[in-house]
Image 1 (cartoon, rainbow, N blue to C red):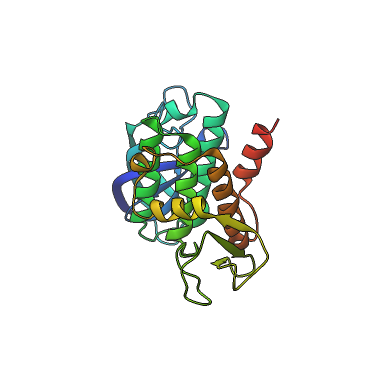
Image 2: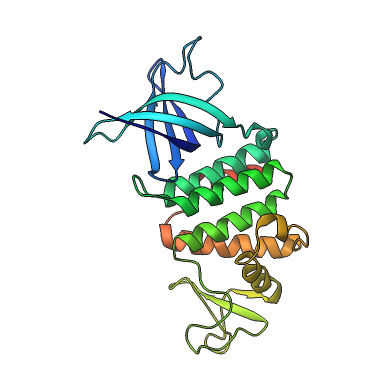
Length: 247
């Protein structure tokens, strides 16, 4: 049996039988992992208050070859994230951020860039960065790191810079210029500018000159179209968030 100790971000915590919990978490060195926290639901559990959604923790686990689930050992809370979840919108957003990693982070494969992305996004939200901006930045970068986000500067068909807008080729998930594809779903100059800035600036820098809500809404739709094309489905947390907040 091998023992591992590392820093982790908690993605999901679910009840298992009468006393235990299954915890999904993300690490730099080992990617996404799932483990059983024995007796985590008992009154005097050593995990009491430690297994918080999106929390950053120091965590150890024991694993046996050939088993999917590891057994959690010590968990020490390093940075809680409950301040993000003080209202319904924050709870839904937190679930949405976590589910991205469940789908895009590979199990047992190093994930330093995805870990840094989620970690820095949580830090920015705790510091008060606008949620709409943080979510769109996060979406863009998850898709970029997955290698499926289209470049926002040059048309891949004619190699010419985009003018004041670009058209999404839905079947390929690519952005092309209007000359190569006269009709279709488009984004404008402000959206293209945000996409380019997001590649060079962090959330704190972007928030000094935040884009309008209309621009962020268009980016949300773009990311959703690309994500759905790649996954061939929509994230359940996104559907719940949209349906709930629309009420």
